[in-house]
Every structure is written in structure tokens, then in C-alpha cells.
Amino acid sequence: REAVIDGEIVVLDAKGISRFALLQDALAEGAGNKLHFYAFDLLHLDGWDLRKAPLGRRKALLSQLLSGLGANSAIQFSDHVEGDGQALYAQASEMGLEGVVSKRATAIYQSGRTKTWTKIKALKNGDFIIAGYTTSDAAEGLAALGLGEFEDGELHYRGKVGTGFDAATAADLLARLEPLRAGASAPEGVPREIMREMNWVRPLLSAHIHYANRTTDNALRHAVFRGLRDVGLSTPVSAKRKRLIAEADLATIWVTNPTRRLFGKTGPTKLDIAVYYALVGDFMLPHILGRPVSLVRCPTGKPQDCFFQRHAFTGMPSSVATFETTNSEGETKSYLSVEDAKGYLALAQFGVVEFHTWGTHRTRLDRPDLIVFDLDPGEGISWREVVEAAVHIRAELEAMGLMPFAKTSGGKGIHITVPVTQKQNWKKLHQATSAISSALATSAPDIFTTTMGKDNRKRRIFIDYHRNARGHTSAAPYSLRARTNLPASTPVSWSDLESIDAPEDLNYSSLPGLLATSGDPWANMEDFARDLPVL
DNA sequence: GTTCGAC
DNA sequence: GTCGAACAACGCGCA
DNA sequence: TGCGCG
Ligand SMILES: [Mn+2]
Ligand SMILES: [Mn+2]
Image 1: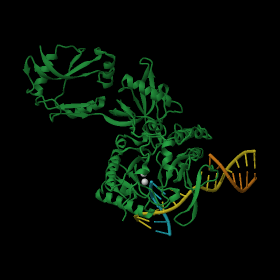
Image 2 (image 1 turned 180 degrees about the vertical axis):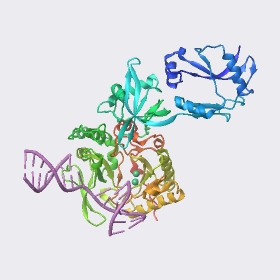
Image 3 (image 1 turned 45 degrees about the vertical axis):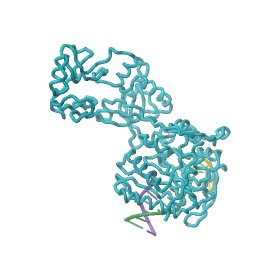
């Protein structure tokens, strides 16, 4: 007999569920014997064109045609259920199947996307921390990943995922995870039997996971690995790296308690922070040199006793510069600035985690050269929406003749930084940025708000223009933030911004490596200073 | 993390 | 000498 | 004037 059949080639796992990763493995190995062809439609049979026949009829003929094939045949009839869609879907969800395809029984055959069929996914999507892994002797490699989720600062166990990665991906994951075992510990709520087999890692990587639902202990059921959540930064054409941290400077790095961990038992060590700032110094220093700087210090490593410091302190190394100026009350106070690599690197010893800068230089305090629109998403706003908002504001600012730059805030928000010519004082800049922000909020009141009150901020993005006042600061480019996993406030090109899944993936651990190839997208920002239109 | 004053 | 306490921001907008 | 906020 002669037939044209529509179907799909799959590889089944032990439970008879088709797995794309197993298909990839089979193809890579040339293991054709593992393939199955699931036939779901019949287009031609013995010279008859059946494409105008109703689906029900075509499937009946297909079933008949394949009826002689055994249960182990490489060709299988893809059976269907008529009606009862809800129940079938519920069943598919329960089994951890990918979803259900529904087709109109009376429809003719048309290739491509039509309204006569629809695919409904039964799986939930989520991103989970990779908390550990197990290995198998058989495969001589990765067997499963242990997953976790942070809940009020504590990592909780969420079950294993042992499917969804092909051999190459598994090898890759293993290579990324092995170095993370040092300093790791188990999350909360790990069952005894898991405790024995799992190799815990420091919780620095996240995975995209599909799963059916959760058990009563919140572990995922039918979890499928769908890829590592990773940030890629593009390399700009003019990524010339100017060396600001010399070998001699690196030799001066010294900290007490280098192995003390901050922010929990699997957190970064004091030495990790010192090393981070040494590695990003070439990119960060141009943005902080000569500016008044405030610090967030966490000498004890406990988040609740971090403190903000704007004035000189006793015991401070002489390499950190100080100067005096008056505050709004007219009192003369001492302030800090970083003037060279030595002073910058010396700060790690004092538990400095965050750097915050004024939008001006100490030599011209009252001629600011930067303004910042700090986008703070309220409850219920996704990262995607903040990005979209930032891109919108970018266009508005460009329409005013300005050159806005973007960075992640280190939290959930985005900072839009705009270099301006040093022609206005703080009052004017503050007024102008207030007016711009209010105009944005007025034109899209259900997206933006400019009032701080937490109530108005639900489901909205707070445009915080208050950074643009004398003595106010915002997190410096490349500054870490004092919270779990030390995310970095990371300058990114506008196109990279849109490719970021989760800003916390840019952190003390990942960023130095990324920057080594990408360079600083904010390099020479001062060349893009424009006049800010003021009233 | 550092200093300073009390013991 | 050792130990423990003290110390480490502030300007803006709104109620 | 006081308070919340970053
Ligand atoms: Mn913010
Ligand atoms: Mn803010």
C-alpha cells in the first residue's frame, strides 16, 4: 500500500512519555532503533487524496492501515479521545504530560497553524535555584539536579529534576556545578534519602523548569529541565579595556577574616567581595573616581546590621580621600571620595559591600553631570514590564535630545542614567526631572506613579527622581547590593537589557566573567552629555 | 571593623 | 591586657 | 512638625 502520513518522531522514556532531550541523544548517537514515529494523520492513501476528508474519517482509515503493527513497532498510531476535553486535560496534567492537542473532528487537512486545532499546555513554568546534583555511575555523569527556592532569605528544597537535559547539556551542567560544591550546604526541608545522595552546591545558578504541580511539601512533580537561566552580554565593537587596576595594586589587597561568609552560610566570603571589586575595577573606577561616595558596610555579615556611611570614619585608610562641604543645614561635614585604585581596593577590609555616588564631582559639587530615573516596580510588576517601561522612557528622553543609559539596579528595578552638561544647579535638575517624571505619570497613570506612598505603587512603576538632589546618591555602576547572592547594579546596552531574564543573574559570581569579554557599555559616557531642557 | 574607656 | 559598648545618613514630600 | 522612604 502507498500512503502519505503526518506524524512526529519521538523517543520515549521509561514511562512511555516522549522526551525531546532523549531524541537529541538518540540522534547524536545515531541510535535509530530508539526512534518511534507517532502517526496522527493520513493525507493520501493508494492514490486517493484524503485532504478534503474530515479528520474523523482520515483517522479511522489511518487506524485501519496501521492496525497490523504490533505494540513494539517503530510506527505507532497516535490515538485520540472524543469529547471530555476537561477530563483528558486534567489527566494529562496529573501525568506530567506536556499538554493536549485538540482538533475539530470535521476539519479538512491544512498544513500550518489553523483555527481547527489547538494545543493547550498542561505544564507550569518556573525558575528554580539549582541547589545540588546527583551523579550516576551508569551514565558516568549527571543524574539529576536538586532544586530549591528562596523563601524569606532561606533556601528551601523543591525536589529533583532528572530529565530534559541531553548528554551534552548534562556534561556542561556538571562542569558548571562541580566548582560550586565548596562552601555549599543543604537547603531547608530535605528528605533523609535525598540528603545521602545529593551533592550540594552554592545556590548561584537557576534553571527553567516545566512541572505538573507540587506535592504537599511543595516539591515539584514531573519536573523537566528546560535550560539554564543565563545572561549573555554582547561585546561592543569598541571594547578597549583601559587598565586602572595595576598588578601592584592587586598585591596590596588584604582582608582579615577572608573566609567569613556574608548573608548566610552559603553566601559570598569577604574575600569574594574583595576579589569582585578588584576584577571589575577597570570598568567601575571611571564612574566613581572624583565623585562623592557613600558606602553600605556590612562588617558582621548579617544583613540586619549593615549601615550606610557618608562621612569619614576613624580607622579609615589614608588612601580613601575625604573633603568637606556643607549640608542643607549649613553645617560643615566630611565626605568621602575614591581618587585611585588603592583607596578603592582598601575598602573591602572595612566590610564595604555597596558604593553609592552623587551625580557630580567633588571639584564642582554644585554643577551635577548626571541625572537618574530610578524605576522601582511595585508589587505585581514583572521584570519584563520594567524593561518595557525603561525602553519607553528611553525614547521620551531621546526625543528631548538626551542620551540615556541603562543599568539594573541590583534589585528588581532599572536605573536610567543620563549624562548632562554641567550648566545647571541641583535645584534646576531636580525640578526638571520631577517635571519629566510627572509628565510620564500623567500620560500613563496606570503604569507609572511619582508618589512614594506604598499604596499607590501596587501594580505600578514608581519613577523615583529624588536621586537628583544635592547630597542624594544612587547605587554606583557595578556596585554589589547587600542581599542574598550579592546582585550587581549592572550597566547594560539597551539591546542586552531586553535579553535579560532575571537581573539577579548578574552578581558577584557571574559578572566578572561576563565583563571580561563584554567590556563596559557605559565607557566614555561623559562624551554623551547634552543640555537638559529646564524651565 | 575599629576605637576607646572601664576594669 | 581584655572586654564590651558605641559608632557608622539625610533630604525630600506628604499627612 | 514628624514620618516614611531610598
Ligand atoms: Mn530603585
Ligand atoms: Mn528608588
